[in-house]
Amino acid sequence: MTEQEKSHLLILDAGSGEGTSIKIHEIGQDFDYTLVRADINPDDDPDYLWDITEEPPEDLLDRFDIVIANHVLEHLVRTSVPRAIWHLRNCLRDGGELRIAVPSMEWCAQQILNPNGANPVILPVLFGEQEGDQYQGHKCGFTLDWLRALIQEAKMIPRRANQGIFHIIYGEEEFLAVENIVVAVRHKEFEHVAADPSSALE
Image (cartoon, rainbow, N blue to C red; front, side, top):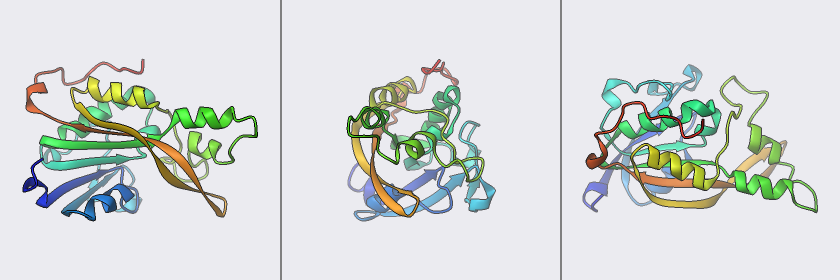
């Protein structure tokens, strides 16, 4: 995106929950934006009630400068993840960015094997909230290479793949954990592909 195109961004927060992603606040430090929230849970009062494993609403297609899925994909059945990424991609305009963050399986493995004892937040990072609503449990996980491969299978170009820090509340304490992040771009030269790509997770 050019600087002029970035002057005001249209952003879709897919799987926003009841609030908005911290990733959006990071963008908002530098650019003006209009935010659209989509979620599967009607109790979170989203702008669009949408299960990302299903086709997007028509008026979400080909619109957004940025689509964010912040700690969303791990809540899906693993075989539905490639389809969900495809649907998120289809909400982007040409040249738009998809930004995905998920818990890091590499970090979890390191913590589990730590000879000094496992980190107390490993179980909630791996399995999510077990006592919340039906959408809060984790059903799959990702290494950074795995996530990047799924993005490429959706015919997007990874622009950045790295790890970062996120905060998790466990009990009454706040802990730091590690997330895997991929930022990818959609370009029209990759449009002529199958509408339902085969799963890279099968």
